[in-house]
Length: 610
Image (cartoon, rainbow, N blue to C red; front, top):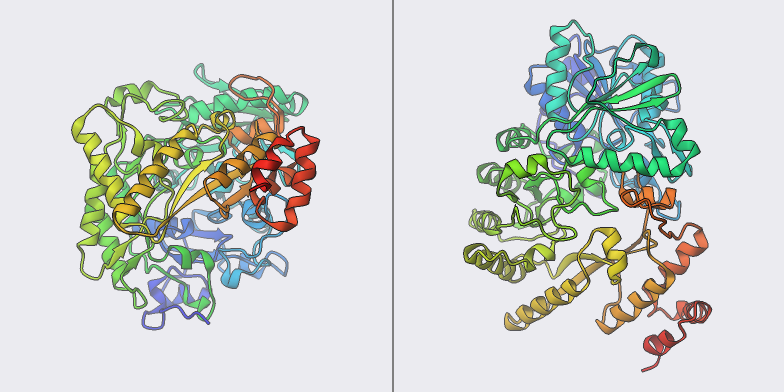
């Protein structure tokens, strides 16, 4: 059984989680109490720890209540009393429903953010459940929502698990304020403003959302007024139109305030802060984390922690804008990169962990190779509202220089105690194939590609073509499949030259909007020709606040308002998914029958006749 190395450290090295731990610090009152749907791991990859440490750095007395019991007499919600400033509520690192259920709405094999992967320590929609309880017990104490569940449900959104359009999570939870995106800057200013105003919640704080009665709402001339929640319920096309506005504002450097009526109230979403500076991001990562689970989990395994404990996140944001992905909606499309000094400091902290054997599992981020990339002329970026900097073509203003990233790799590998640093994040091969015409940058990209394959692959390199159909890929906002062929040729050539036996592991998605059974049948033939027996595959899961989800629910593409086909029924989705597994004998009969049914008997020969 796994035992985390916490015995040698005093309990006060962690933020307190119980009354006893509060008393050990000599406190008789708390300023902020955070409730989290995840286990408490004191690590920069776990949001509650980040916010807790950040507030601690402001001189506040902070406690965390991880995975409170919501079924009993609610003692976990009462045990620390009322905080001086506010309760903070987060569901954890993932939307609770994505965390709990598969695309087929089946219970996942384990909850990765819970001790021993247990399923019974987190409710569905913890943001709503926890807030409802806190408002009932302490009606006069403000509750502030944060984390990805709140961030992506801040306005009317489609909920796949209930198969209905839901209003802002502010409506269902009764929370007083919602912080969206990465929370360091808004929560820092929130505390400053609360203390200056004797606990009065500000309604002009950037990157927050709040509700007001219609009769008290004061619109601004520059507000972006969305169709109301009720209008979206009555007309799916209006929901699609709303989403385009929301996504475009999310990807602007300077955005408008967004307003949406819901019943007799109005949800107001204030514009976000400008992207963090490198110094601000460094400060967040340099807080005094123990990098360990709380001692209460001694003898238990936390799967998500096992995955990331020897990895380092070197940047935030992603400018890929993939149609099915929520990263840019939550972290933003503008890349914020840590300094080399901050990264090396974290790596050195990892080398000091007692069970570290010299191998970093990942030196990456939302995408492996976007570190330090930005617009050459940032004044153009400030006027841009494109959701992607690389689709349908790579923006000529993008500086995609890989040399700063190569410098990070070499500096990390030169540290004592590091035997090897691997890249576990997905690599954007379209950035590796792009030629700018600048010899220094293009030569740097070629050197990066060579060094990546030669030194940083742990036997398998992850890439995400996602599909083989260019029509589907265009809807996904992914590059044409020809680019995967190009990269595979480079990968195979370098493996041969270097006498390596590494694998390229491609990720694919079925049932994405725009994808038909015929597209999946052709994917099966193409991947067979490439000699892939696919492992990394998934059925499209509609998640709040993605363009793909809006197309799936409404039937219209939000940017063109043209109809888009989606496999919606369980039968349609399973019929697409089975083509991933053409090589399994138990699937052969059903695949052959389906190919005959859709009039593609010609593909039977390509799949099954040698």
